[in-house]
Each structure stands twice: as structure tokens, then as C-alpha cells.
Amino acid sequence: MDASAYSGLIINFTPTGIIPTREMTPYVPLTPEAIIRDVEEACGLGITMVHLHVRDAAGQPSLDPGYYSEVIAGIRRFAPDLVICVSLSGRCGADIAQRMAPLNLEGMAKPDMGSLTLSSLNFNRMASLNSPDTVLQLAQRMRERGIKAELEAFDSGMLNYAHYLLRKGILVGPQYVNLIVGNIASAQPKLLHLGVMVNDLPEGALWALGGIGDCQAAMHMVAIAMGAGVRVGLEDNIWLDAGRTRLARNIDLVGRIHEMAAACNRPVMTSGVLRARLGLAPGHGRYGTAESKLEI
Image (cartoon, rainbow, N blue to C red):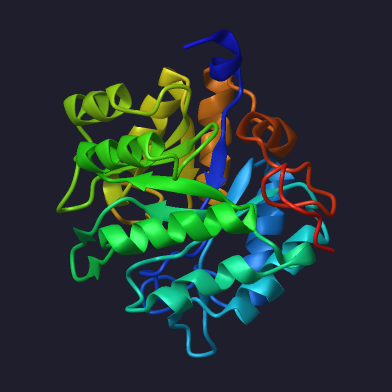
């Protein structure tokens, strides 16, 4: 790993997710206003990108582009170059048209990236359904729209599928990958599991590590020591301690990353640097991939 890759810490902020509810924690942001507020607070400390989920008026997970548009436009008022990724989750029971809908946003609401989970998998109480045809359609639609795929891999088999998509030319250019460990039905927070996945990353890919639940902080320390990025937020973990005695706020989790990073001399990578390394447009009114048309 070269020195430049080691020096810049990607902080991928995941404020909401699908699982946390108000009954579980009062701190999870569910409304557009609350999500925007948590992102602004995190930007005040320093983050590189944000991975967004949105909820409807009842607090249920949604893929409604209207909610995404409100949140993205709100964020870009104070962070015009923040890299923004929209979740295209397979856990909402949505059909392919609903999952593609956020990719049709334009102008200031156009996302830079869209999540692409590379296979189906089971979570503790639900499944994420990502058939080969669905993955292909989402990837191809992102290419058409000039939106970069945020690859999500929960085991090495998903990374093998990423290589397949690269060979087919469906994925092109530098890749960004979230490696996510600790889910009950996929890779665990063990160095052997992680090492196999890191070994199987696409050549030259930028990557961040996320740990689900109690393993989150430990996996962040491993990632920072390895020169990787981190995925952090209430989407993956609502507790500040492994003993589950203190509920976390998003700002607490981001603040802990900054403490770890300072101890390891890892400055946060700016959104501008990440944009350049992934071939994204520069922000400030130009979003998506650098070669995509200006749509404002």
C-alpha cells in the first residue's frame, strides 16, 4: 500500500440505515431534517462521504426519490462537494423500478454514487435480495446515469462477483468497496476472514471497513491501522460501548474515529481528494462521474 493511500482516511458516514427505530434509540435520525442535521454535525468534525438511507413519514425505510431529493439538496447547501451515495437496498422489498428511482435525480439532487450489494444475503431477521439480474440492471443504470457504484461486499464470494463485473466491462474505472463484517450469515470480525477479503479486492480499489454491532470499534481500529477507510454510523451500531450500557449519537461515533485517527496520524481524506481518485465530478454543482453531463 503506497504512502498516499495510507495518509488519507476515508470516513464513510452512515447515519440512518434500515434497522434502527425510535424504540431502539432516540438518536437515530429519521426525518429529512434530522438526517441533514446529523450530516452537518458530522461534517463539522470531518467526513469524506455519506451513505444515505431515507424513511417515510411513518419512519419506515423508503426508496422514494422525493425524500432523497430533499435530503441531498439540504446537505449540499452546506457541503457542496461532499460525496453522496444513495442506498439502493434490497431489504425494502422493492422492485427494480423502485430501486432505480433514486438514480434518476438530477441537478443538485443527483447522487455521486449508489450502493451495489453484490449478491443476496441473510441478515438476522430479514434478507437482502440481490439477484444477478438485479445487480446487473442496477450497475448498468448507474453507468448510463453517470453515477459511481459503491460496492458492498459481505464475503469473498461477493468480491469474486465484482471481478466478474469488471471483466465484463459493466464496472469500469477505479472502484470503491465497503467490506462489512459481523453479520450473522456472512464474514465475521476475524483477521483471517478480513485478510481473505482484502486479498480479493479489485486491483487499485479504495476500500473501507464496517463492523456490525459490538465489533464496530474494533474493526475501525484494524482498518485505521491497515491504512483503510472506515464506515461508521448508527446504521451499523447504536451503542457506544460493547457492554451496551450507553446509546451512541452519530457524532459520538464519528468523534471516536477522529480520536483513533489522530493516534495513528491518519488525517481525514477530503471529499475533493476522493472525487479525484474515483473519477467523480468536482462537486459545487457538478455531481456523479466526471464524464457525465452537467445537469443543473
